[in-house]
Image 1 (spheres, rainbow, N blue to C red):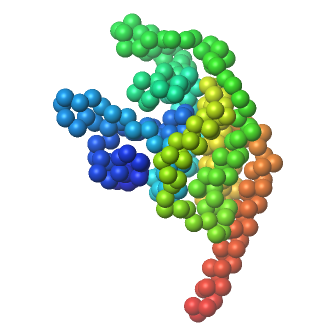
Image 2: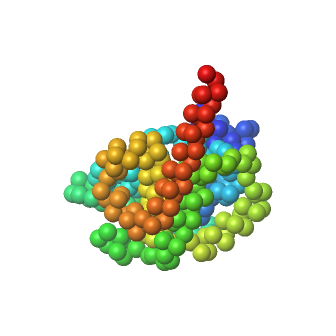
Length: 263
């Protein structure tokens, strides 16, 4: 139900075609790619690309399970083999079903799986990324925009801004497309985009976990590798924590006052 409600907000889909969506993904071109099933056997599948900014901010939090906000395994660290679009080259004409993917091989079992897929013609290796992705393309500096993304996130704003009310409508489609195009020209690309996305999600989730579990339990919950990645943003995060603490204190004081009035 959450997924259907989300895709129904996408321009070009709406409630009328929400049930036709076979898959969707947030892609590196700052658009949600939604794959629609063919309307008739004579037609081919269609991919709708909706700019992130066209989505109503109010749909963000309800569309994500709380467990996702508490997750720090964004890279699927225990998997033998990981496949995803982050870190792979992405062109303006690419879409979720045709774009190159990045494959991370973590051990001998993962290597055997990949080799077998290649032998059977199911996978074609277009570039060897080297150990740790060192040979993959990477441009830009993620640190310049990561905290900007964190600050604009709906969950972070809910935790830090007392007067935040998410809008019920996104920007018009033409403006969203223009903004997505501009952002893509300035964002980090390749493996640096992957690092940007990981850093952003860890930082956002850390703020959520600290509010949900409290400081001590959050300290136990957040893994050391995530803390190491977030260390570069500590000064900015301290400011966000101060904002979150001030908002929580104000809420508690207000709740206490309301309780006394009720008595």
